[in-house]
Image (cartoon, rainbow, N blue to C red; front, side, top):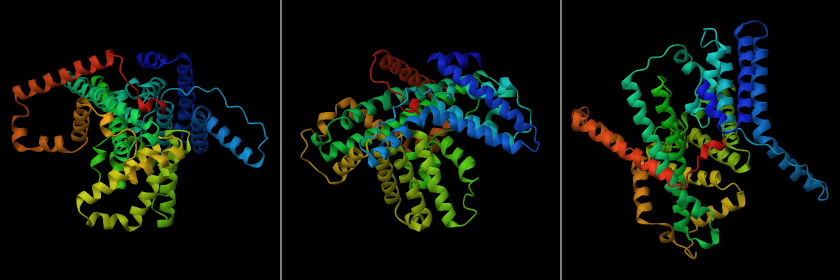
Length: 441
């Protein structure tokens, strides 16, 4: 636990004060809820409101001020604007705040009847592998492991391998794809042609997946090293054949959190189809807003929510009858359109970019070849293979399974992982492009 606090304090001591204060208050709320008395529900509401206010204060206050200034200007151009506040967003605040809300909910629902302790609560919230960029670890999924877990050399080895895979996905795939995406998307849209616009968003599609899934792999691997089993957060989302399936595979910890703590408490699908559609749209509006305080994120969430509703209305049944390639093509195109809204925060610029993609303009000064090299082409091909089910299918081949546990195969795997680790370290030490997209969420 102390190491987790030191790890978090590395990004700023003031952030640690916020984290510690949040833990203390939530522990107090949890102990009150745990009493199971007449005031239990009131304490749950107080705790949830407290956590929401923390996120709003640090993440959304300037967003509300900006929109209030815009509304004032509509009615009075000479009205003095309200000054924005100088707020620094604490790293990972959305993740650890959501975890604390899940703790309060789970205790209220009596999903775990054991009495909580401050040390276990503090460790659960501050556990460093997933503290700053997820996955969102729910209280009832890990509390038993906090009280009793088993470490072993075998589990440590599994954790090391998983960590190296995640690091390699992040450094070798996400970063290279991110360089391509940033170079194209940050270029004046009038200077590029349609194929280049598609290359930019395809590269970003790979970047955001390998960045976040790579970090999740590292968190799961580190957890394994310390004897913890953290649930999976991604399951090959880009092989999905509907938007509904996509959200079963993408950022699983977030989508399941909203399902269990927002969608179902709102009534889910228990009160008729119209209510279900409203609940879905509200959940995805909140999902978009969770990612950031801009209208582009909100539109991205509503965009996905709208197509989920369309699939629920009946389109999903028709889609299942169509050829698999049609289902996949429909899904991946919509996902990439959504990523345009997600990546380009200014809506007019996002619309301009989409028009460049779909109106097939070839009059740009720069074409695809201007942004590609042999190394980038190889990385894009590898990214496409790794994000597909090809490797998974190879693993299912019976012949492969028979030799999978042999010494030669095991040694080859370890050698490849060692080479990936060394290569990743070389890339890191070169001081090259190395952003973490989900840190700001």
